[in-house]
View 1: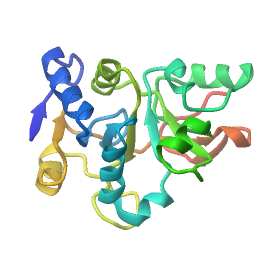
View 2: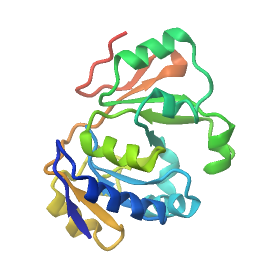
View 3: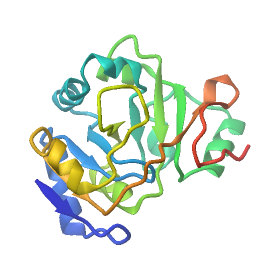
Length: 204
């Protein structure tokens, strides 16, 4: 099913419908401030299994990302950070960054015991933020790729997304054309090392 949502002023009724699907263990495709992404309720184990199945064994090669509304929400899933780190993240969010951070014990219990780090994102996209705020917790996400290889090849047109994924997800959130640009990935635990540089430039 596809739901068209206004990209700047998402309709509350439509957001509520999307969240109801997430709460029931559904998987969605939704826009972020970079590429479209697969997402599910972080606290629903069966939904997480669906996400992993969709990406197959290759999911272990990707950093699972928690899409959060702010640093406060993210802090429930990462180990404590110092003031300097907090300030850098605060200065660069919301924005198209994925911060690789040390996961706390809660994450290991939810996903896999060996998971040491997690990607944290605080997007500026109004639709993504509205969904997260209505849900009240992060969305576990993986960028939506157009093929199974490891190249940066993304689907950006909701029509193409529907054609390829309508049969395997519960809702496709159409907020217009996305972007081909992924996030800039930053390793916080290694002195803010840039793992992948995209359009977003980190302000340290």
